Image 1 (tube, helix red, strand yellow):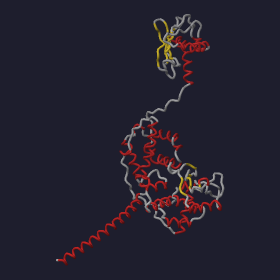
Image 2 (cartoon, helix red, strand yellow; image 1 turned 60 degrees about the vertical axis):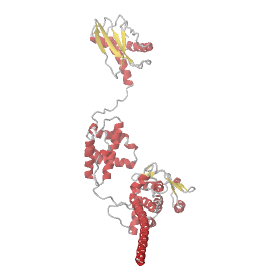
Image 3 (cartoon, helix red, strand yellow; image 1 turned 120 degrees about the horizontal axis):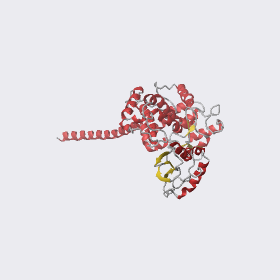
Image 4 (cartoon, helix red, strand yellow; image 1 turned 90 degrees about the vertical axis):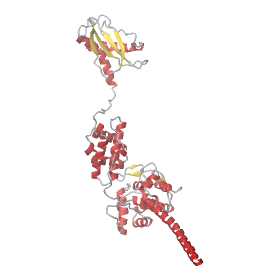
Length: 456
């Protein structure tokens, strides 16, 4: 602090600020800025009032009567009040101009601004005028890496093909019901299936929901208010292997595909769950196969199964026990990761190769043909298991557990046509019983009528 200049505190300032003033005085003594201001011979008067802190400040100088006054805000918070004080310094008569007053005040401001810069927190992103493209960029950076590979690929495809071309430059605040409906209608013109439009809209909805949680001003639109396009083509036929066809396909396949298809057929596993099986997955003592992982069909990267319910043990039948023991003793190739099935390079099989060289080649050998556009893969065995169980009268909740669905609603949604067939069989049986009784009643009626005629 310049010689002769002292700081006098107002009684309203906390006594604990004394040490703070000592530090300030030391800083002012070494500050070259004060050299431009003449030293004052009398002590300036200090005043303080509570004010909010600003990130950086330039202070203020003004005249009060014949004297120049400077003011700035304290950085430290009063621990008793939780507030910050504004300090006012009244300079002596040697400070005779605005320029001199600013020079005398500058060391106080330098100290404050240096501390504010040191403790500066990153500012929140501006929410005003943000576009859908900007939100998608942020979502892709922060959320997409946490998605499973298959889901991430589908989301990126929806974003690249539909969302960005149609909504990329639209401000988030303008995404009202009309914008949503226009987007869905535009997607519907390009796709044949209502389900596809719903999936694309689901990706958009997921991104916008995250944006709302992040504080962006996005109008809330309910899915039930959207009119989705009708299917342009009939539902594709669900192709599945019944028990006899499944056995023929498995017999026609070669190792290791033969055993992989057998496991899929008996246990109803998905392709990624079959390729992810490890020796440690086999519990021969309890006759269980532990389903704990699934390989991505494109990258072979190991992840979790489709859902939490899918991560569950499945029964190991006597048939599987026999063939698994035979595989481990005669064909299994030890590998670092312990996978049950590996190719010639010691890596787990690609899902597409299992379908191509296992299922399709076996079907070609057997002369089994399918309609154009019908997809045939490992899931045909899973569909077959479910269909056989339902047709044989297995309770729906048992089928749900065996297939490791989330709940019975999922089973009913995917296999309602099978349940319908079972219901028709039950209805026919009941109708036959009624028909037999009706026939008997007719016979009895005819007998009673004949007897009446003879009596007459």
